[in-house]
Amino acid sequence: MNENFKLSQILKLVTPTIFMICFLSLYTMVDGAFVSRFVNTTALSAINIAFPYVNFLLGISIMLSSGGCALVMKKLGEGKEEEAKKDFTLILTFAFIVSIVISILSLIFLEQLLNIFQAKGNLYEYAKDYLICIILFAMPTILKSIVEQFLIATNRPNIALILTLFGGILNIVLDYVFIVPLGLGIKGAAIATGLGYAVPAIIGLMFFIKKTNILHFTKPSKNLKVILNSCYNGSSEMVTQISNGIVTFLFNVAMLKYIGEDGVASITIVLYVQFLVTAVFLGYSMGIAPKISYFYGNKDEEMTKGIIYFSLEFIGIVSIIIYIVILLFAPILVGFFAKEGTEVFNITIGGLKLFSLSFLIVGFNIFASAMFTAFSNGKISAIISFLKTLIFESGFIILLPLILNIYGIWLAVPIAEGFALFVSFYFFKKYKTIYKY
Image 1 (cartoon, helix red, strand yellow):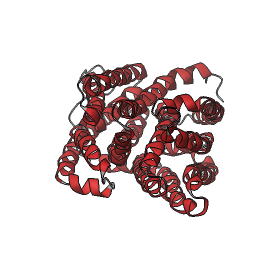
Image 2 (cartoon, rainbow, N blue to C red):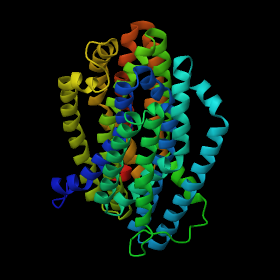
Image 3 (spheres, rainbow, N blue to C red):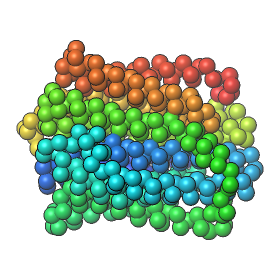
Image 4 (cartoon, rainbow, N blue to C red):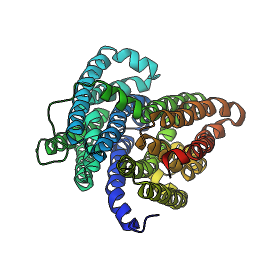
């Protein structure tokens, strides 16, 4: 490791991003807590029923932010500043247009979406109300992560963090106002989340108007390969989010089959905890990835290697700490969503103890995917993400309950993460000599 490579420097770089992504995950968690406490657990289940759509929006956002940012930062590292600015402008323009198209199509095919998500019976109206509001805020949902990722990449992580904190606090305040005094129920939760995305996205875009910034809006590039390469390079992140949506859907179907609506509420709570845990590792990986791209583009092998091996050590230590904390404070975490002694509470506590085994492994798989994206190797990054979520997790959610009943549902993700770790390790060793780490 380079002697100039210090722990304090890395933590200063990634801490704002970790807090930013954690707060981003809190948007949905706060919705769930308020809805569960002040509406009912059926409405909480409805949020999870509609959540694959949110995964889809976030997938597009993270695909363009991670894939596009890696390409733009690599060009900056190579000294191609004007080209980088044009590519940056094109990526934002494309995201804006795509978000409008998605919103229009989603409203046209709303009923079909609800049918696909298995929104039936008591869940239907709740899921419909929530989904309509989320669709109307599709544009800021997609733009927010892209804007913040470029702020981080251009050495403004504190601004990105402030925007996320502001959006999170706004979401919490509006959740209370819309749900409790105004009585808007699940609609209020969705509107609060939408505004929590919209306000930071608008403010963040304003920073790139200034010509003094290393990246600022200019005439967009006419090279559509920039979009194709960004999407390809960030495809692993898109695959991850889409696959998470599919996994959530399969969890819902399995829980409805084996337990019922209480089971959907329970898996919703556990997935909220998972969102928060993975946010730590995703935040770290997103914070460090632009630097890997920069030093790789600058051909600084020593710094590239130092960052990667420090990251593996950091993730290992943090994984153990998180696992222990989750086990110790499980009743408190679950208590935010369900009252102690209720059926939902009891189911969730038992399930979380098994599910949390995945928290010991997930960080390594997230970093491996992000690392290959940083090297502009979207193919390997996508393979890792695709196998982990769409193949391993989906497969085990379908198969394990047939053998272990409800225990199979809770153990599906930990076992899938274990299989994915072998895949990550294989590619890590295979490309070690190519990327000089």
